[in-house]
Image (tube, rainbow, N blue to C red; front, side):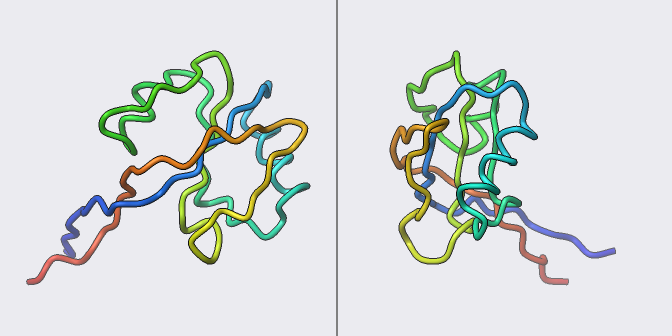
Length: 108
């Protein structure tokens, strides 16, 4: 059996907020406005904001709790800066320093 070790790597995470009825609607919107974005590296948080954000930020930044939050992780796009702009449905809240998990195979 292979054993993996989790490492939390520092990352600049871009955060947007918007008003969406469901996660699939967020992803549909992202596909329309940013088809090159790798959606497997996008987090959509609609409820329990503090608990879900604590997986990426310590301390958790003060973000709106009454909207849908969209976290664009660095692996979602090439380069250092998130190329995704403000849209009619999503407004940027900024870039926040956090961490993303990275698994490495433990030496045997």
